[in-house]
Length: 98
Image (cartoon, rainbow, N blue to C red; front, side, top):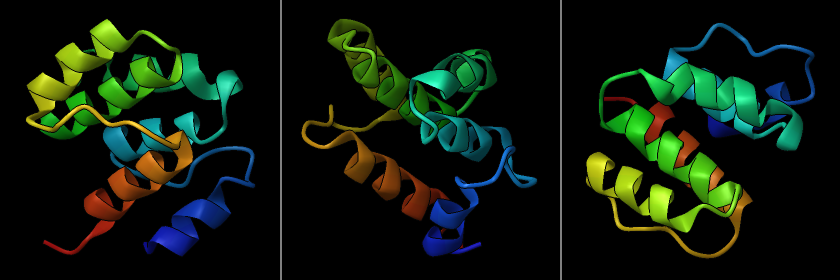
């Protein structure tokens, strides 16, 4: 899946088949209505990818202290600026071929 395909999928009623971190990011892209679903998907998910999305979610809700904790767990600097741009950057990183 490309970043453009991921963005386009946000118009659907449900996410496509994605690993939990990307599915959480999809729900985060739905705004406030998807926050709880996104958080539930990454809350107990191990790994730096889930921690990065967890950080993004807490930044989106305005809980910068909690976001900072999760950015550290992800091994990432705390983000600032536009949330949609950060979400795109995370999606691009997770969708990139490895």
